[in-house]
Length: 600
Image: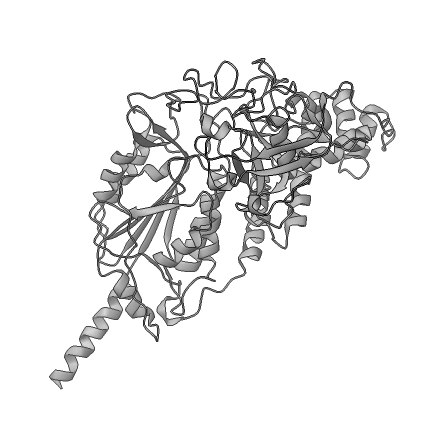
């Protein structure tokens, strides 16, 4: 009997160890900044949703700590270092905030709440090397660090495939969990390399996709390798590796009801996301649903809910001002059919349905006629820093079109929409920013209704042809091969690129045309100031099969094209051939647009 008892006891001990494993997650999102930083309103809802998934689906003890400064983050990491952990416990640390790379010191940093715009002493920035040391001290055997910030790929560590389960022909959940946690884990995932990332996090979106369960193996668990496979679809492509004493261990997400369930977690992630948005019933929650679920079943309902909330903001603003002009502005935007049309009519002694405006263009709409022609689109091997999606150079022929001399201003947006969404407000002549592609479509619809015109966004080819001053072979929208901060609003501080001049970093937009450096067509700010939305959906290999005449990419990609760079970008991203992208719901203090139209 004794010879049979020992294996039974060992099996019981193994099962008990698995059952007593505790998984922890701590999220550090930063939404609010001062000192010139762009606000990041999406970080908190993104982290709340990820934390909710981990609690509901995988039984994590998940904590979200928003808007912590450097000292508060260090104190929390020190607290985690003082806790006891079991041999199979796991800890996920998620940092969602601004990041920075100091060229002079070759040092990557996180920029928590309270971060200064310039911190040469690193008093308010958290160096990656410092973070690595603090995390490595935590005695939990299995730690996964996620850095959802610009330049996070500079986190110190080495590349290498993670350890974890070695799958058998007949997958066994218990065996695979045991294999994953048999060795020490110190692994990191970064949102990108030495580069900026979108304010609406593709990394967070793909993590939610992975947590949804479709990518769990036959054993029902989501391994680190499976997670990385899903995250590889994000753009920019995330970086990953190990650090600080990693011994090749893994990290596993085991369904909340444990290994007894060999199927993926059961849920409808789209329905769950929509239910969460409705429960929150906030502008941020509905916008996050639209940003995250590009093909969601509830997008129309989310848009209606978002429109009603935004209408409520406009109405409350009109009540606060209390004058006829404010109520008339509400009527022009929302009547008939608005929530408060009757009240607005009473305030202005006007009929509920406002008089239809005359169909005429705005006075001096600022559009410039661009004569069509043939040009070479893309980045040639002779030019510097070409990205793969800028190649090959190919011949494109365009018809005539009109394009805005300037980016659309906050004044015009407010005139049409009744409210200013920009982060850098109180500058009527600055470009409107923090507008999504979806927002722009609503603006164009209203502008066209008011003017009887057919304004639209430029196609990507039209934009580049215009930025090149009619197809000329130049690098920048000022018509030159040099980015000069006196002519272009970009990040020129500590810049080492040979085709740029170092100097001022303004850290915000400037009034359109104020740098007085138009190109050959008289167009201002085609490089820098704000990124500009285009009409095209983004495809990395589109140039390989682009039509030769009037091309426009209309595929059902998840992202749309952005061009021109911004005040927050280095000159490489401000080149006229550089291509960027964002989800249609993406908003950022660096994103705006300019008008375009076709000859009538």
